[in-house]
Length: 343
Length: 266
Image 1 (cartoon, rainbow over the protein chains, first blue to last red):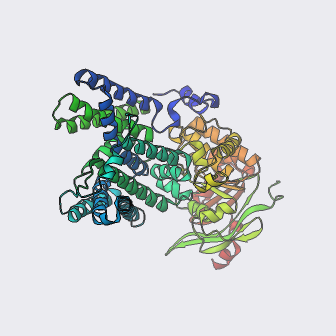
Image 2 (cartoon, chains in turn yellow, brown):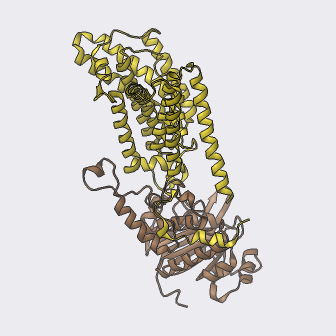
Image 3 (cartoon, each protein chain N blue to C red):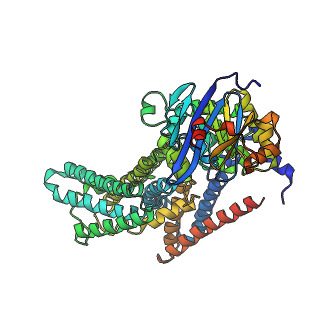
């Protein structure tokens, strides 16, 4: 039961009172800060339960572990903002890593430098190809993203096994391990630096460019975007191409970190990537979400995993805890949303 | 009346539309002038939406011609119509709720930055914001802020965003499809005031509305459609709500307002 006076103030809200409130973002600043709070709370808990959790070593392993989910999460943020989903990112990680390793193994005679370059390029090309296929099927053939990427997930996982013969490819130049496992000043793993650079690039795309605006517009209202003259098919195609390439970069980084190309690498990692985006406050219906939210989401998941290990909790519990965090985060959103509507 | 003194900016002559065996519109003449509000009334299925679709370029007429500023015009798409200065606000408003006011106003026609950064796809946010502020100032409905997402706003404010967009695109003709259908009393009043301001600023406004008291209050002229034909072209000041209802229900008909070609046929 609202009174007319409340409605009129609603319309007559003063323009001057604009700055600082949360209405200017699809995911409120309060929500993003509370994510930082949750992250800090986990750190405190693990500092108590985990022996030597607050250490340089934990920092390095957490940031290195988080790198993959930061990159896949950034890719997934674009896709989910556009109103879609990309289930194939984990399988692309595996396939691009295997294809990169296979290429390196078969070009060893060219010398390490050439061989690594060839492997990296082939890996990236594989990711771009799968992403283009996803985007083409979603944007031009109008198949739902869930079905398309479920299909390419199967195709990529299968091909990774076919190419590798089901076993890790190990005869790759050892130099890639030296590069990928380098650490700047003891606190900045190379993988983490790459992830941060890609995140910055993603943020620039999303906030600064026409493409980013159109990604959010298409996810927010496809019909309005079309009416306004947004080239929505091209936008969707590019979203999945971007997702494919970012996944391939993650695949190549993991190939470097472990110095093997395994068909198992990246398997099921799409779930953690989607979890990072959802914990970050994004809506699977599209339009709503931020990269900053995904950043915290990926870090919360990573610190949970390293914290549980440091606390000697059996690894099987990781999935249980991450699952509970996802459901809690979304439940709080829903309850807050409902109470806001009832005001 | 002063209505005939200004040249019409958009003229439709003998407009007709067939969908297979169904004649949705036949022999309709219409002229929209700067500084006038023309209301389009009629029952459901009378052909109001079909006429607006033709004028907005969304549908091609089966018969008839259009003139913009005295020149023959063919509107093959909404884009053509927009190029010709005809802007339409449909009932769904064409808004992306998760984008800000500025982003919505410039959606699909973002201003690129100068130089290399523009080539990379960067937008000139400052220029877009300034132009949006200008357009919103003309609309004179207070918005919480240009960087606020539209989802958080009321129905009247959303309408204001949609109209601001048509102003930023410099429309000389604005077509409004039931601008107050989803609004409460207070917001309806504000949108009514907005329509009056559009008229005063020299825009030709055409609106579809079922709110007859508001129609009589705002309109210069009222065009009544029935079964796809024009049955009344009334000067609002000389008629009452009851008159308009009589035309809508078919109790009264102005024969002379139908296009001559149609009269010869029947």
